[in-house]
Image (tube, rainbow, N blue to C red):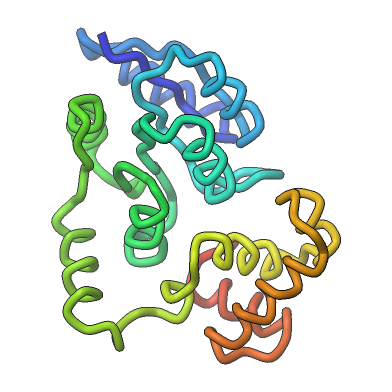
Length: 210
């Protein structure tokens, strides 16, 4: 029996996914969460085989939650199930520790296939995502600017783009203000931008935030 946790801030999405997964003879949904903090509580319990994680959530985003989950339980497979197209996040999050990435517009059967693959200890990569990764490996010049950021830089970038202050980011990521400021400087240099407003515009235009 594959024990599954669903993390999504929309109760209707969780209910629909839970109902569908419950129809699979070897699946059991054992936990649900509406945000990253609740997801970490589930991970601490250690009774889950695969965690299905949304990206867009209030408070701690799915990106931050993934980093925290990887630190707490590096072997736990995490399937990202997001409303964002693969081109926006998939390659970046796979590099940051996700075990698979699916867009919410995928066929339900593909979610089942992905969970089975992850439960066997393998990554689930769709042909579209494989193509994106191959393109990036073949020509680094094709990388989007945000894909050149490190994991921590990417976290800081998203928070700045959402309007968080350096002080707030410092508190939430448990980093010093000086360290966050250094990350901000690196982000600006790598992305060739000059202000937080530029970051927000880039993130909105790229579909990284809503």
